[in-house]
Image 1: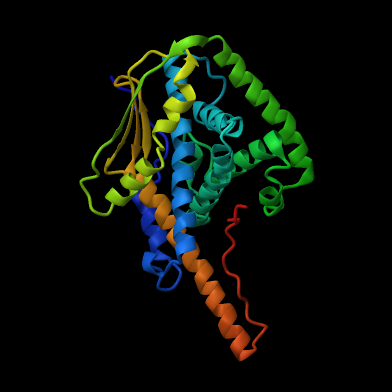
Image 2: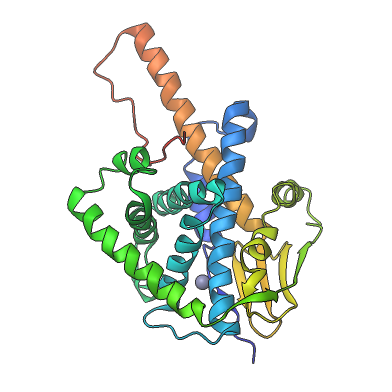
Length: 303
Ligand SMILES: [Zn+2]
């Protein structure tokens, strides 16, 4: 029997809920070129975090690594460590968008938590966001200072995160060390399947242009005793999700996931634009008592 690890079951219900409460008149057409660029980077960076999360499941399964605690939490941590320890600054910076991604999903879902959230194999969305922030604070507080300051992340917690991060990083690297092999090169099979869907094809193209799926081979393709032939596939799945399938030895990233992150950003920018318009109207009519900023999402600009 195939045990398919579904990692990001967000569900159409929550997407519907998100789109049911958009900022007034939000459409992708209304975005500025800068917002579109920012949104594309957000999609790419969240795809990277998700792929590194799936690659964590891949390592656990391929290398038969022990997992103490919840595997979903463990591979979120591994994904964070690999991005934060990367020599590629863009991968490191991607962590900010990954945190923002979970904050926005949390915001979209509102306060309506029920038992299914607590029964889930994953932590709550906001917990996942703050776990990522904690890893950033622990790994390089100076590099991420502006971002973390913007979240009012308590100083005491930041200090705890330094030790927590060091322990997590050393635990993962300790486990992987036994499987390091300087002479080994591992061949991965990367495929961007056609989306067969006009709405999703642009996301397939975006991921391909940015060589997002290739990032797994770039990270794990040299120096680890991982058997050849693991597939990394982008495709239309019919659900917003990503998977590691041990039977097929395949990591799948669904294009719907990118569309979901795009919807989050369109909504976020729509709120931002609406707030900006309110500010202009306010200045014109001089009614300073009006509450302007209704958008509480902690999404911060990168430098
Ligand atoms: Zn997972």
